[in-house]
Image (cartoon, rainbow, N blue to C red; front, top):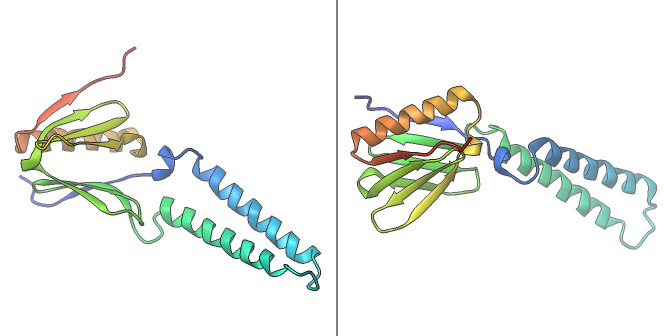
Length: 162
């Protein structure tokens, strides 16, 4: 039996309302707009400094988008299979969710999500739209099957209705 961990990288941009490209485009448009406001406004206006504040906020927003969606500081969004635990990390600024195998009653693998049912009645839903690519999905499915078998957790799979 493997003693190490398997980490599957997630892409949070796949589950957001606006795609990564649209978010970056909006941020770049706002930066260009702020630069044009600074270029065309005279320094004698009363609130010209607000253009600098707006520009700074646009740059911070662009940085947030890049850090949250791209592995700038390493993989920050992942689903990990550790011995006895499932770990879900949804991004750089979010805490890890750790699920112990001994506290699980059932894993439900749906086409777009994974439901983790715990013995205390809680249900945690993990978005699988963030798992991109057929190879990564196959690795995830294989790891879930092995994890469920190893720790005697029921694994229920539902396929999409055709």
